[in-house]
Amino acid sequence: MMEHKITVKDIISVTKGTLASGREEILCEHFCTDSRKVQANDTYVGIKGENVDGNQFYEMALKQGASCCILQGVDIPEIIKSQYPSTAIVLVENTVKALQQIAAYKRSLYDIPVVAITGSVGKTSTKDIVASVLSQKFHVLKTQGNFNNEIGLPLTVLQLKDHDAMVVEMGMNSFGEISLLTNIAKPLVAVITNVGTAHIGMLGSRENILKAKLEILEGLQKDGTVIINNDNDLLHEWNEKQNHEYNVITYGIHEKSTIEATEISLQEEGSTYIAKVDGSSYPVTIQVGGEHFVYNSLCAIAVSRIFKIPMEQVLKGILEFELTKKRMEIKKAKNGAIVINDCYNANYDSMKAALDYLGKMPNNQKIAVLGDMLELGEYSKELHEKVGEAVAENHIDLLICVGNEAKNIAKKAEENGMKKEAIFTADSNEKAIAILQEKLQKDDVVLLKASNSMNFTQICEAICK
Image (cartoon, rainbow, N blue to C red; front, side, top):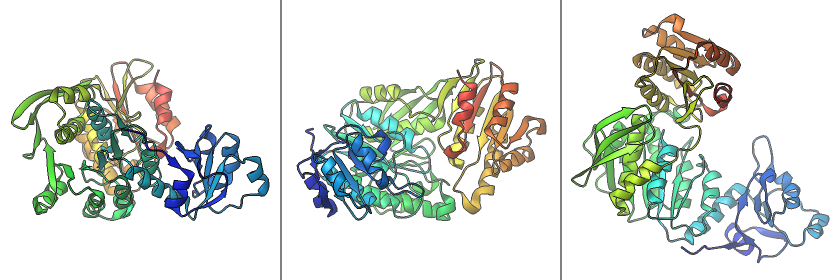
């Protein structure tokens, strides 16, 4: 695929912006929203946040070699215009909206398939494995990290160069957010991994979460395909009721689906199963443990069917995929114990999946270090208690809870039969580290999981090599 380049003139046209200084012919190839990370010839976009207004740092961007600045709410002094005559400065009404408009324009220049992935849990890991499978046939651009919001997705789209496929992740906190993202990305394939409880505090019910996730269909191309996890109750029910309006491929373990997994064997370092695809059976090996990665790989197989990728290459892509850091990342502690670093984010569904995986580990002692799950609103106590039930159900040997909400995990675990002496609460990561350093033995396995703002990376760094 040939690269389609954008100029300052294009940006002014699509944003209805004003050229404050510089030339319209300047090329805009790499976009950056952090003035500290601007490199030569970057296009700097000033974003006004809650605490910091990036528009105020445009001079820093210019000094570091930005060839274009897109700004709002600033007056550019004549001395700056004369000091940087070869740099374009474009003034717009709203830089976030402008970034989205530019991304939508760039997307329109590329006649390539886009796979968009949303869901309450598993978006990033599913994105990683789908991209790995598609990479067997295409030059794929994928969302880096979890750049899945109103700023992150446009920045991903703006990285398009000579790619011939794109895999993007779409997150949301409220209604309308996925609608915005899908109308930028215009996917050929829309994937919904599940509907759980993430952001239930903002949306009020799982039914509303489903409604928000289904906004992904608004940008789906007319000949597009929807791929769903058929074992998810709400997605299964939606598919039963949707009157053949959409072309749907289903995947699952328990419900009868288009792509199915049987004979599943979950091991410490990975999993194997038999995939039932188009009447044939294929042995699948995944190098990451946990049943949720069986689901992720089934989804990747479903995507591969649309693009007619041979199963031999699909299996290779599943085997070779690399997981985004801090998501079920297996590390070694200083004393040789296994550490499952899954501390990027947390909600009830991902907590339960991680605990189910931990519970099946063959190690001497299974330790769970769990922190607060955020953005749950009035459901917070109930969902933390449900995590406590999952801790007890999986016979976890030692539980360390960090944070105020996580105390509900500890309380419920004890109520469900876990011994009081095996449960610890800590009001800081430092205290959790101290408990771990005392209790962790070389033949143990420890799970670290909490919402990202709990900074459990600090715990991981303290106990790992």
